[in-house]
Length: 178
Ligand code: FE
Ligand code: FE
Ligand code: FE
Image (cartoon, rainbow, N blue to C red; front, side, top):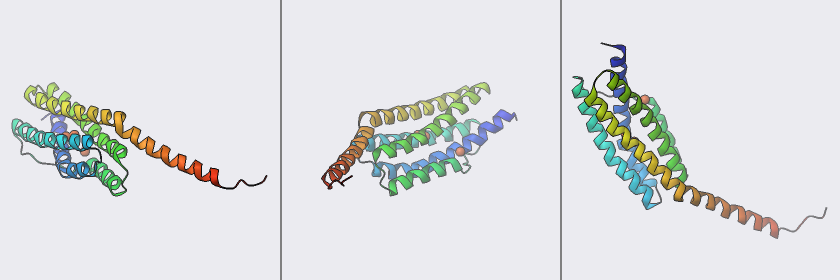
């Protein structure tokens, strides 16, 4: 078996485990979202994630391998950071940041695996991987859209309101004679 085929199978195991971790984490992230738009986006991607796991099963089958996950430590870490942010009530802008870090990990993986599959002349598998890659990219773009149109601005305005309060407080303080 070629080195690239070995690498493909190994990385498929990694992303298969990562997607399963996400299947458990995404409902918590959807629940933590304040804006209905963000909640809906995360819930939509949860449904896509179920499809992506099915696709991975098909891919393993196509390769004549049992579908088996290999614990993805990177996704464990990314999810741990997201869960910490949720616990700390960091808000939608921060939640989107964490979600996009996750999507970018997936985009890097699926982009590479698709290239490897076509190089190995596994065109059906390359097509399945391309379908998932498109969904991950679509999710990432949707998150950017929500961040730039509302979530970041609202987070910045919240910050601004606090700053104004601080300014008012200091304005009311008696000035010290110099
Ligand atoms: Fe995914
Ligand atoms: Fe990994
Ligand atoms: Fe994803």
